[in-house]
Image 1 (cartoon, rainbow, N blue to C red):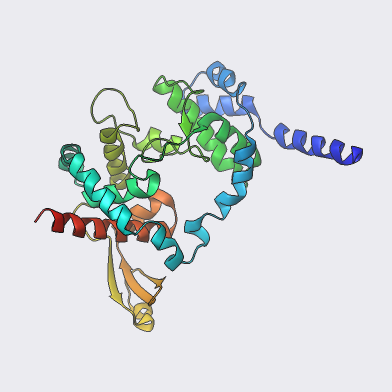
Image 2 (image 1 turned 135 degrees about the vertical axis):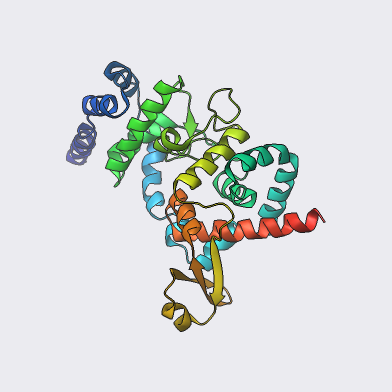
Length: 292
């Protein structure tokens, strides 16, 4: 047991030694012009979080990646979410209309994303973002990605004068109502109401999602996807970009347009994008019926 303990300590130390705060500080200065001393002073206080270490494996096996589509879809396409989204829209119609008038992104798509990401803002992430990124930069299989996001986090807090030790996010340090990663905040976030960027405010969240989608190829008033047939062989013969999704009552073929690609870039998985699309369609249908 003594040797096992020594080996464990050595293994932990070796892993932690792989984290180079000086290098990260210099990279953050090079990429974002953030003073090296600022980054060092923040990183010096970062802590490893055991619950984030335990979460690392679950990230690799998250539902949108490993669930069959017919098991994944009901998590998000259900009556409760549709009803909640419709009521949420009615309460905040003025904000949705202002954002739509500027960006033109379908309101129902924005509602679907907010519903999936944070249950329309009801889910309040509680994990210290700095510590989550620090832990993931050491222990995740995607160390390079999370180190990049850690650099983005340092730049975000410096640029917007945020206290890096008080910001809470998801287990992977996704922030705010739309669950933006730090580099996405730097690249796409919008201070829509002019009172300072705050992704926990609905107007900034909606504008930021809209801006993200537009800059990733979304075209207003264009199709996202289109159901074609249950005939899978016919699907494969089409020249369009197509995909087959397995529902409980069988397989269905869809044409996927550029707007679908933009949705997929928001999360990275085809299951997420299709669930978001179908939820947005259901929300719009319910909205239309409720306003008649």
